Length: 212
Image 1: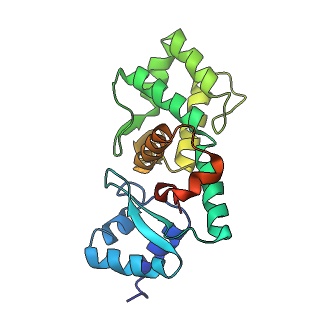
Image 2: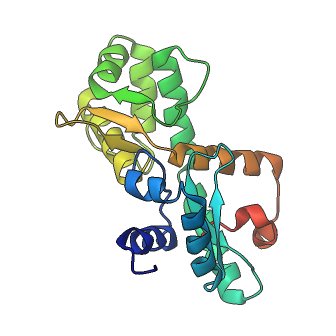
């Protein structure tokens, strides 16, 4: 049964650090919707010291370390955590900008539609929002030398697609759908808030930090 192409694709994606949800990997997400498939994937991952895990909102699957009893596993998790938090400030700044543009009290939710043209129209009409966009695009991963709002927004959208937070919809290239990687990010934010001040050398001791 492990010769099933979807089994192989699912395991490969998980071990590659992908966040599987219905918006970015619909075939793999549907494959994992069946309990017997979940078990087969989990059994396979177990052999590699990994475990199958869902986000707290149960809208995405990811793979995490099962045990952190080797220096290699501990070092890998520590590096993954650093990589994941490297762009936190910029991502939070984007979320705040998007909430202001949409006059919303909640951050982006998986499945939500994001229209580049609508963002540009609303930001261009408000100098305060343009200033926030300029500030955002001075930070990685959104940093750009473009000085026009259209070019800056396009850079932000492009990087969010590349990093798996958005998926392009249709052929226009300006309509996007939020993926459940945002759910993963919110889980990570919650962990950091809960464990504020945690020592770097103890990060890997908490099972929630076993990212991949």
